Image (cartoon, rainbow, N blue to C red; front, side, top):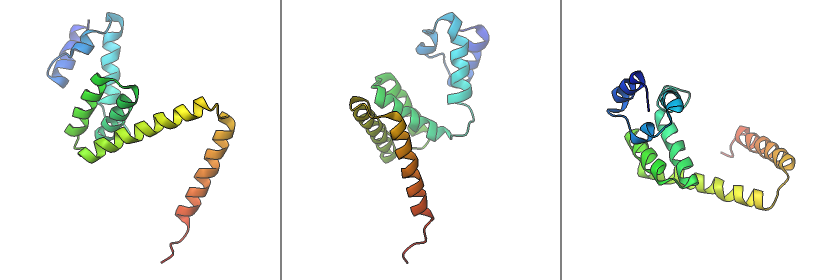
Length: 133
């Protein structure tokens, strides 16, 4: 149950107190709203559109129909196109796929980190090289 102050603030921002906020235990309700307000909905380094697309990708990866519905609506509200929604879900599926391969194959993390550094160095070198015009 949210405090009266938080209830008023949530209603001002969202037009209502959603059931998922109401479902939070009293000790977490005000904090949960503050986290959502300040980080997810607030002004941060990522735009609202970018945060919504990240949320959609994460929701798809964890297969949460509630979060998928919310973040898809949020992404659309923030101006994301259908192609961008599809791409966000596609990126998340690739991350989940390769995470499964990495864990299932027990790839050495230190070796993977070294390979990643080498790949980044190579790609950055290619990007900095003059074109073949």
